[in-house]
Length: 578
Image 1 (tube, rainbow, N blue to C red):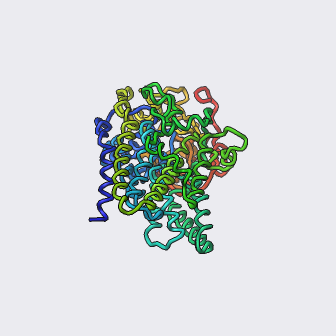
Image 2: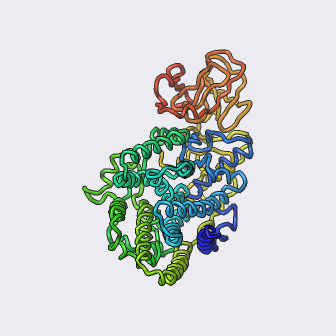
Image 3: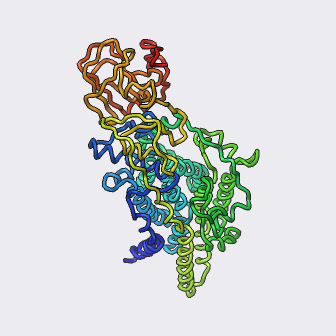
């Protein structure tokens, strides 16, 4: 029972904090503003595919002229959210995954902090509450940034990793691998990049202070290799996909100043504009609201009297704050990070506030533990009571500040379908009614329609022809005859056709990807002006194309000669095609 009590205490604070969440689950249909539509779409596609076809396809034909699923960080394929979406409506699955990760991460953070820092149960609960009840996660929840709430696992990932460097353990490494997989499957790229940055310094610090640096370095190298090998089935295709398609982000034009730090972390309104209704906020302020609470503010002077072994952590804290400021000076840390492939793709540097919160609360918790160690034994019970009271006050404070706009989130009703597609495959349309969340993807999916909506700032944008265009010849047609054909069997990642006339080019109104392979014919898919196509050079009873993940394990150029079929079938320059 003694081992259960601290966990019960932690669960009490979590339930006490989240008790007003029922308002979030009032409807399965209402959508939230900002990016909720994007992630609901990706999860809804997985749900639709499973319910309609009984499978989990690897190609999404409804999105941007076709898109890979497994490689795309936003798809959440293979994640816990993906599994929830099979049982619950997609929007509910996303909301349930937030609560699930909040609680599960709390358990991991509790165990890892106590394991690595050798802290008391009360101090560990203090750290977990300070970190997880910060505004960072709820601001991401408000904005629908469901690829960032997994930052909840950042402390556990770091502490388990650092513990493994110094200690032999049979099962702790697998917890690190599990957390890494959660981050990968949920598309938590920002958390992964920040964890990598912090581990670069913290692992070196750990190895340097080790009693046997050589052995610690060997254990570190072996552990990193183990993680990369085991998770290669996920991170290799994701890495190649991101680096192949490229990223185009609007640079953050609003660098921070020192005067911004107080309102971001401790201001009574989180950030000046966060005192307004959600409807009046600008996008960039979602990145800044990160209310920590008044108790951590009052404990700020503890950083001055930090223990010697934590001085390095305090220094890393200030370095991370400098990264938050962005590209403000020629000597800014961001100048160096922007030279690295991954970090050059960071969109908004204030998102580093996740690492700031983690490092800051770590320092506070360790310093409070130092004070308790200096307290005489007869006063320890009173000190514990004071800490518990402060925790309750802190929880009430942060709950009020970080969930005060819950009733304004899920208020947007998707428009009624105005397009009725009678085909089993999606038809490509130019647009759909925008209902307020800056995206049209979800209602298009409901209408069995595909739209050229690239919502993730990816550079390999490809506009295929839409049904209202004079150049549209159907989703499947022959070139140069321009005869429309229909598949005998269609699934999102596979197409089957009866015998087609020799000497024609089968053109599919999707962008070319080398992952598509011909199953039962020697006719090989190729790129025809960027379209997925198959030259019919041999007599064949039928043609079946299927998307394979193996084609994603390499970089490719859609115009390279080995894949380009425009040489054999040049584009037809006629009155109906230009």
